[in-house]
Structures are given as C-alpha cells and as structure tokens.
Amino acid sequence: MNALHQVWSELAGLLVDDGSLAAFAVVLIAVVAGAVKLMNVPPLWGGIALLVGVVAILFESLNRAAKATSVSRKPKRTP
Amino acid sequence: MISLATVLPVVFAAFLASTVEVVEAFTIVLAVGLTQGWRPALTGSVLALLALAVIVVVLAPVLSFVPLEILQFLIGALLILFGLRWLRKAILRASGLMAQRDEEKAFAKETDALRHHAHNQRANYLAGLAAFNAVLLEGVEVVFIVLAVGATRGLTIYAAVGAAAAVVMVAIVGAIVHRPLAKIPENGLKFVVGLMLVSFGVFWTGEGLGVEWPGADWSLFGILVVMVAVSAAGVQWLRPLRRASLTVVK
View 1 (cartoon, rainbow over the protein chains, first blue to last red):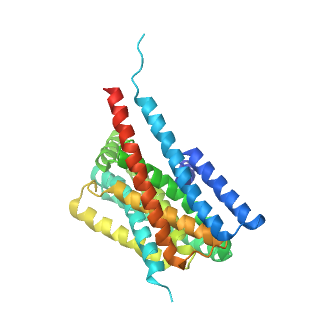
View 2: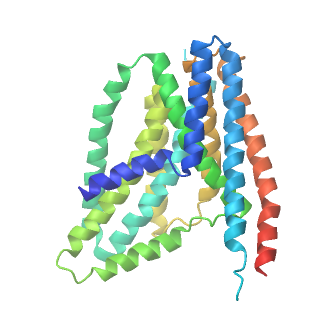
View 3: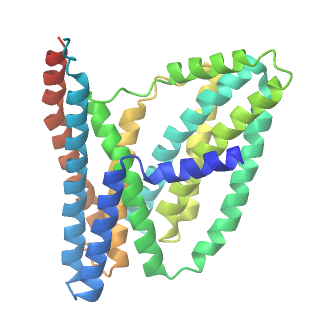
C-alpha cells in the first residue's frame, strides 16, 4: 500500500508542484476550449490566447516564487 | 510520410527527459549496489522494469481507442501542466533562486540511509525495495513522457527509441565511471525539456481544439522560439532579485 501511495503521489507530483500554477493552467485551458467550442472564437485565436496565457501564468508563478524567496531571506528582527 | 520536423522533436524530447529521470534512478541503484551489494540492486531494478512494462502494455492499447482530437487535447493539456512545472523550476534554478539538484548529495543521503539499516535482518529486502521504488517512480515519469510526446501522432515507437537511447547511455557511462553522474548538466537538460514539453503542449492542445497552425508542424518551432525568449527573459529578470535578497542577508 505504501508503494502504491508513493506511486500515486509521484503521479500527482508529475503535474502539480506549485498548486496555483496548475490551477491557473487548468482554468486557462478550460476557458480557451470553452471560447473555441461554445462561443465560436476562431481556433487560431484560441491557440494564440493559449500561448500568451501560458507565458502569463509562468511569469505570475515566477513572481510569486521570487517574492517568497526574498521574504524568507530577510533577517528576522530581534527584540 | 512522416517528416523530420515531426519525428526529431519527439525523439529529442524523449531522450533528454528520460536522461534526467534515468540519472536520478541510477544514483539510487548505484547507492544500493555499492552499499548492500548488486543482487538486491539489480533484483529491485528488474522487478520495477517488469512493472513498467505491464503499465505500458495495459495503457498503450487504451490510448488507441480515444478519438485523435480528444487525445491531442488531453495530452496537450497534461504536457502544459507537466512542462510548466519543469520550466518554472529550471528558470528558478538558472537564476539562482532555487538550489541546483546535487547527485552527490542524493547519493550520500541514500547511502547513509542504507548503512543505517545494514544490520537489520531485512537489509537486503529494504535495499531491493529502495532500488525498486527509484526505478519505478522515475520510470513512471519516463513512460508518461514517451506516451505523451509519441501517442498523438502514432510516434510512440520513436519516443521509446529516444528513451531507450537515454537508458543505454546512462547505463554505459554509469558502468564506466561507477559514481553518481553529477557532471551531467541536469538543470540545463530540464530547461530544454521544459521548453519542449510546454511547446508540444500548446501545439497539441491547439490542434485538439481545431487550430490550423500556420506552417503546420513547423509552427512548433515558432512556439518553441517564443518560449525560449520568454524563459531567457525570466532568468534575466530574476537574477537581480537574487542579488538584492543576498544583499539584504549581508
């Protein structure tokens, strides 16, 4: 059971590292798919939106990681 | 007729991604072999390879029943998730905000853990289990990559050749040097693989949605160029932040 649990964790870890990054990516893909399939947005525009969205999501995640790193490296105030 | 523009990126992506995973598994198997003997190391590894073969035999035919557009969309979406994870980590490492993976350190950690259990009656079993887990877990990633980059165009066999070449290369180099392969530029490989996986992901998700990309398969290179440019910009953007945070520490 432990081995199975580890394999499952590894499989989940394949796709999800930064939870927000994964969530934003899923939302982006769903929105683009909805726009193309339900709202008749031209597919090529959907593809371009996907590329731009992926870049935006990557930078948002990097920005968050950079902020978290700078906060954790700030010296603690001593009383 | 399958064009080189279609096959080469698939073989290259599978080879590079598998190299990263096989190096990580090799570190653990080597630690087991040198600490507890080659019998548990090889037994654990062979059993894990058999388990992986079962996964491939079960999974590959299932994929052939999924309609192509849905398969492209689903695999493309998974590749975006998977590739973004690798790319983010590679950019953070390249900019210095995240520590590089150290195979020597991973080897020392595993060796210490195995020595701790050396007097245990089940030492051989635990050592074999460590090798089994390492090969299975890293192997699952290799299987995922091979199926993901190969399945949408019926190129699984080419992707498998790329992965097999990585296994053979690491095994030969590992057998010669008999040490953890710390000199392999793992972050550089991860960077390239992350870029390729995200590019494949955007391309195939788009194809699954009915996008007719300008230039057909060649637009994959266009997407790759965009991703290379923005990732390089990301590294340049983060480097000063690292210097600033180090200044704060001083």
